[in-house]
Image (cartoon, rainbow, N blue to C red):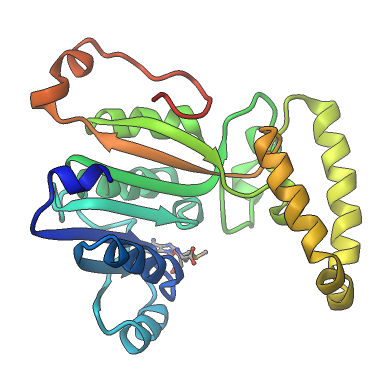
Amino acid sequence: MHFRKRINTTFHFLDIGAGTGFWTDLIFHMLLSHGFQTKTVALDVSDDALDVIRKRLPYVDAVQEDLATISPERCSNTYDVASAFYCLHHIVKTRDFINALQFAGSSVKQAGFLLVMDPILTRSYSKFDSFELYSFRGNGIPRHLYFMDDILLDLGLRRVAIYPAVSFILNGYIEAQGFLGYFVMDSFWKLLCAFYRSEGFVRSTAGIWRYADTVLKDLNLAFSSSLCLYQKIDVNVDKQVFLSGDRLPACGKSRT
Ligand SMILES: C[S@@+](CC[C@H](N)C(=O)[O-])C[C@H]1O[C@@H](n2cnc3c(N)ncnc32)[C@H](O)[C@@H]1O
């Protein structure tokens, strides 16, 4: 494991927008099972969600903060890994989103990692490119990958990998290669939603949809949310790359 080489004391993990702590607990136990002493902090704006964590996961520090207004430097260079799972797209105002992403990036130590899992736009066609903000009543906006890369690169974080997290047949579509693909997915998704209303149907066919989800992700045809891995450049080791302004490829799987 990458961290074993350089962490011989306590591993610091921050889960941003942790909710009731599903991922917080999963990652905490994964680290524990790899022999890491772990200090874990769960941050969320909702005290109700954090109360669940306080009761269920007493070994996690629960911190109530609003990512829209938190100082981006509040936890500067503190964590070996920070994660933001299905949180950032809920921060609809652009200024607030940038603040939240800057906080997430700045919280990571040099050579540490930031994991972002969210609906993220990576393709050429999306209805989110043409919606009208003033009348928008949704509670989430997918952002473009280049936009996130740009903000994080300013803080010294490079995207080192991107993977499809879930496909459109389970979580809806956000983008396509073109209008035709979008139309086909839209029709298929509407049909699926009609069937998904039946619990019996979902239970009896869950295996099929899970398998189909895996196949679509393997074929890079997920068109829904992604998991991005960023690493904070260790300027002592990686100075040349950082100074040359080497931008990452626009999309694709791992660089390594
Ligand atoms: C969809 S839930 C995801 C929870 C958890 N990460 C998961 O994947 O199970 C989004 C979480 O982001 C939190 N959130 C939304 N806006 C926030 C903000 N401005 N500051 C801090 N947390 C926020 C919500 O309270 C909620 O717990």
